[in-house]
Amino acid sequence: MKNAIEVNNLRKEFKAYSSRSGLKGAFRDLFTRNYKVVPAVNDISFSVKQGEMVGYIGENGAGKSTTIKMLTGILTPTSGQITVNGMNPHKERERFVQTIGVVFGQRSQLWWDIAVQESFRLLKKVYKVTDEQYDDHMQHVIKTLDIEPLLDKPVRKLSLGQRMRCELAAALIHNPPLLFLDEPTIGLDVLVKLKIREFLKEINEKYNTTILLTTHDLSDIEALCDRVIMLDAGKVIYDGALNDLKENLADGKELHFQFLEKVDLPAVKKVTGGLPVKWDYDEKEQVFIANLDNDDLLISQVIATVVAAFKIKDIKINETSTEEIIRNIYEKGAVEVG
Amino acid sequence: MFYVSMFFQYISQYVKTRLQYRADLFVEFLSDLMSQAINLIFILVVFGHTDLLGGWSRDEIIFIYGFFLVPYAVFSAFFNIWDFNERYIVKGELDRILTRPIHSLFQIILERIELESLLGAVTGIAVMVYAGSRLGITLTWYDPLLFIVFVIGGALVYGGIFVVLACISFWADAKTSIMPMMYNISNYGRYPVNIYNKLIRFVLTWILPFAFVGVYPASFFLEKEEWYLYAYLTPAIGVVFFSLSVFLWNQGIKKYRGAGN
Image (cartoon, rainbow over all chains, first blue to last red; front, side, top):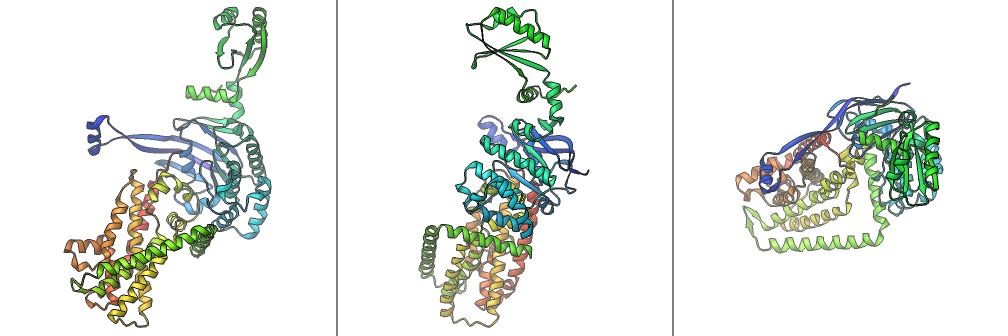
């Protein structure tokens, strides 16, 4: 199968100038500026197959948006090669964007003052979509996203959730084989989120549409993507299946204890002194958390010891959540798989 | 062909948007009409005190002013890009433009159309008719055609200069106050250039060719034969300057850094 996206040693540098302090510094800045070249995206390589759904994640400022903007032809790379849908996005921009759909969660693609269907009509002309293609494809999209009743309303009167569904439909007017979604579910309620996820799954199955998704909501990724690419400080730090990430890094378990009487952390630590347990105390929730290896015997041992020593209100056994794993990775700045 | 059809698509969209706000449209139309009337009175009052300026009579100067208003109106209707930096670069709207399969400058021009500015052309033509009738100007059959060609040429000159100014935003981050300054300079094109010193005349002819928006083409209709060559150059200068500006724009787009989220 051919690759939808192919990226080789992609790099984007921004020139940032650092100002000197004080009035004297400001005057010196006027004549000679201190430029610092900051690589926002630092020699990354990856490829995405046609029909894949890939989550592209990273902290704020990790270079996600910059990458997406290079992949969509908005920004020119400083160096490296990009081939998307067999084209160079920036060089052949006008021909290239015909083959992609883009949704920026924080920016509207639709015209603010006119009815949604008018926006659709104009976009249909922009993308040279014929009436048959439009009817065939969009009727389905409109029905699935449930935006039929919104079509004659101006965009400015829509709620965020309604608008996002319309944005998504607008990005699909020309039925592109590749879809870029930059934080599509930001600020949406659970129901709308679910609807959008379901819809994305459906078009992926129906048209084999490739989807590249950036988000801070890991539940989006868990629901949709088999594969994640994780970015930190402009470098790819993980590229692989989400499950592997979980299995490799989530080998620990967490025991949550709540006690009836007042207990402090040293006391708890003392009781389990001989066992390999790391204790934390969550002050907000008043919960004592024991981090330990995923070993059944050890877990029962710890529980037995604690229960014997204190009066228990509640016990929970948790697997480390994806969110926690990701947070750990961000903090460490690297992934050690295996 | 595609671009022509897109042009009309956007215009029809624009008209629809305008019709949505009926009251607004009505008020705006009235206020536009009023400001044009005031403009007209202002011109007549100001030039009422001058008789002869550098070999030009009062009515001739009024005629030039009237002519100038026409390409200026066309320019204002289609090149409403004075806030390009703020609207498209700082707010990042250019991202959206760049994900659509139409030339970016063309999209921005279409999005920012303001057809009501064309009313200014009516004022301009009224002024020309007034001054022309007092001068006893006679028209031949091809004069209206040349008039249209000159107006388009002048509007392209104007548009080209302002597109170049908009391009500055691709290289410089900070807001510049060049746009308002340029509006001031452009006013010099409304008056006969031979009243200025040589340097200014050179600048207004070859560097910032605002003279091609007003005095040069207008002098053709005033039958000032010594300026005919410049008058005929108007469309050429328009095309050259506008092409240059589009070339610069295409270079600038590559330098676009995008706005952060």
